[in-house]
Amino acid sequence: MDDAEVLKKRGYIMGINLGEGSYAKVKSAYSDRLKCNVAVKIIDKRKAPRDFLERFLPREIEMLARVKHPCIIKTYEIFETSDGKVYIVTELGVQGDLLEFIKKRGAIPEDVARKMFYQLANAIKYCHELDIVHRDLKCENLLLDKEYNIKLTDFGFSKRVARDEDGRVVLSKTFCGSAAYAAPEVLQGIPYQPKVYDIWSLGVVLFIMVCGSMPYDDSNIKKMLKLQKEHRVHFPRSKVLSVECKDLIYRMLQPDVSRRLCIDEVLMHDSGFL
Ligand SMILES: Nc1ncnc2c1ncn2[C@@H]1O[C@H](COP(=O)(O)OP(=O)(O)O)[C@@H](O)[C@H]1O
Ligand SMILES: [Mg+2]
Image (cartoon, rainbow, N blue to C red; front, top):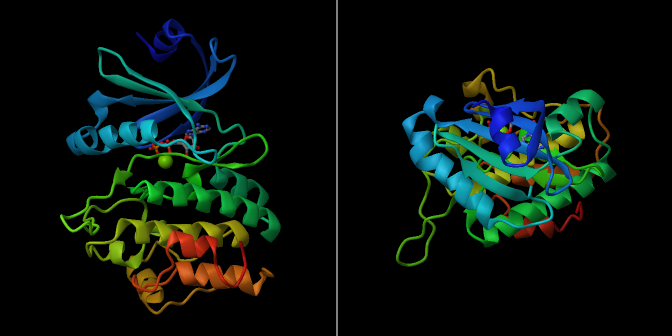
């Protein structure tokens, strides 16, 4: 049975392609029951490698079921067919993802970016308080609803942080995310604090929002790492940005993990961007 038939049986009329990832494709659909359009992420387990099936996919499903926040995409249902396809039905990001948005419209004015980033930071605060880390924060994984509110999605690298018997967070070892958004400790393969890693990626996201370009050139990882470790953040001359905004980015792109802001500090940033 093809996807359209499977979805039809479940009460969805399949629509257009919304995106394609490594092991998933995402389609829009109309739900007869909800009387609205939804998104369906379709994963063909037969085409996916073992560690994805055994580690990442079960976590994605578990985390999606656990999270409930206005700035996180809502999951309606998840089902699997006997031939090994998983269908994750979620709220639709009507205005697409943030990367497409910035590619089309360029840098986002600071006051709009502030509102979007505040929503994103609140979604991360919610996750981190639940001891959930995302580990793949990037513009492609931030969707926009019809009023351009941020909806965080793609929990494919997320997990519950592990803690030792004294309650201390166990460091992560798996490389997650993409190089352009990866913190220097992750790029170097050093076991890392996963919540602290998320903050670095938030710094990259805010930079892209207000500059419309990437903070580092990831075509040369060695050079990129050197700049990161020297704590050098180059803001394009052509962009007029407030001191508060640049300072917040600078403190999230802090290579010293013990000095990088935590999510509460991002939200209470004393220089007052948020
Ligand atoms: N709910 C949604 N609404 C609109 N577009 C979506 C939705 N979910 C995913 N997409 C689009 O599909 C792309 C891939 O989806 P994602 O869940 O990130 O898959 P992957 O794990 O393969 O990266 C996203 O970057 C986005 O452009
Ligand atoms: Mg993705």
